[in-house]
Length: 226
Image (cartoon, rainbow, N blue to C red; front, side):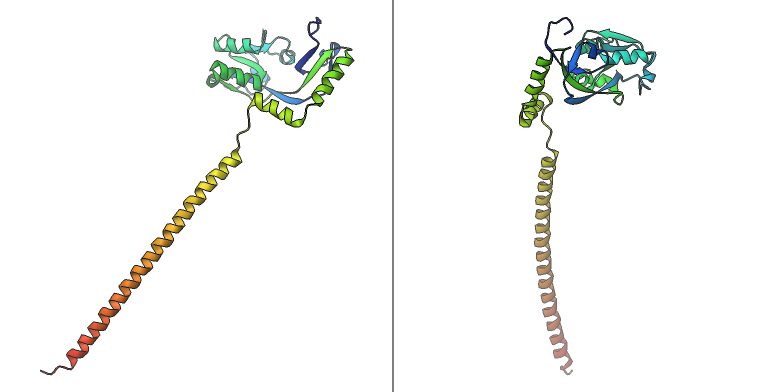
């Protein structure tokens, strides 16, 4: 961008140093970055606790300057893919990458189970930018993205980030199954209760008849003379 090879850069974070070279659009989405470290390392919770570890950072990433200013030793890599590849080869054990990129690349490399991460230590906002003073291109970019309908943006997000799992629908399905089971159980209990009452009534009737016959036999016996 600074050499004039490109007109627009996306997913860039505005910093005081970059304002000397670029003009920025308004922010369009937040992004967080955490410290990722191998699972056999403990105690890394913030920038201060990362001191003493060589920390992998992408060249040109504003987080590199922030880490250096805090006394953290950094190892610079050309891009995030190079950082994850170095982690896979055990060349580095600690690195700082924005969370979405890190999680995607760790899973892609099949080493996500080998790493843990801190709570987010950097929170930034992504923007688009053009070369300093290129007002026409900046306006074109800003107006172009602003013209995309919300449904279109949603489709783009779903394409790259995937669709949200419909938990409510799943829970409703489970609730439906539970309701069916409850209805079956209630119906079964009603049938069993009816059968039990019928059986008790039949036995009561039979006992009543037996008692009546017994009384008749006693009465007849008391009239006999010997």
